[in-house]
Length: 386
Image (cartoon, rainbow, N blue to C red; front, side, top):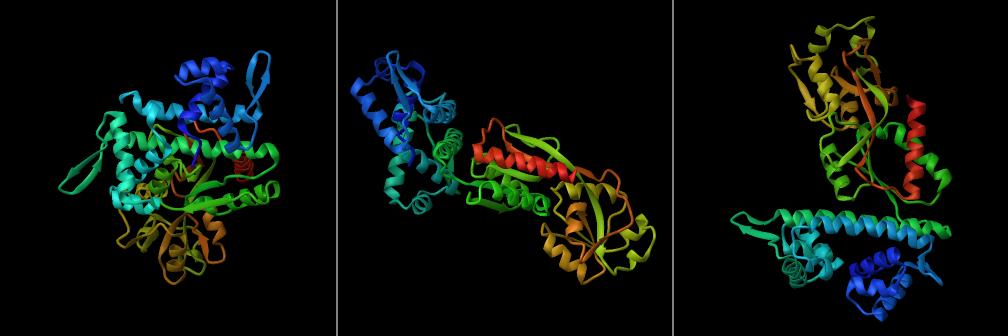
């Protein structure tokens, strides 16, 4: 569990004022309470957070790192509670906020309790106390079950991102004494797994041999949700234009071409040139309609579509269907080149077939040192592919 929210507020004030007396006055506590809170926070962090001088207490390097992250975390919580009673800023605890997050995600006190490993009455009491402090209704019961109100969803989202900031603070401070803490969580869309991401990971391994990676494969909408919740650090693959939602930022690193592919001994491969009517006459394997690649194929077949289309988001599934049949498929050129032992690129150029590939992050996200190192390697690896 992260440091107490009340202790973090005192820490932020002391970092600004450099005075225990002023911190006690601003936070409406005694000076011994401030001193004890800072001693506890120092033990929990494992680093000295302040250095004493005749002019007061000043942040150490570790203190600066924690102060920056804690400031971001608590600003997120405060922004989410602007329309709530001020008491929630003083009374809220991380346990209560974790209970709120779990209930909003599961829409059930029972399932939330199971996820957290707590008794159901404990979770119910935590969210009730949070509601009372906020002066707001967080849950409504309907004939279809329990639903979360806008204030609940807003606060739960802020809590997730605040906790992610404090996890990053722990990672930042660990680097000061040569330890590796934390991990990099990547949401990988199909193209990123075809050479670009593996190369970047292997290059990063040479710099940080033991730093944990967690690569999550999934559909764009699933990965985007994880990114926005702070569960994923960055998402790699085809960018969406325009940007689908305002709280993310996209960085284009290179462009990739969509190509038509078939098995190596497909009858069409014997031709010097393939025409539109040749493609439309064959059955196809295509990605889901919500993807940029499918958008390019649909635009190409706007006047007349193939009669037989199998939809799948799995490159492996596409490859195996094409291997055993006369089906055609649409792939990025990078993916097609990886599958060259089985698939070949047909001799036809699709119109408007270039699509931007890059990194998607949360707007305003501040990477840790390890995450920044990895982002730099992603950019370097992408430049080699461009």
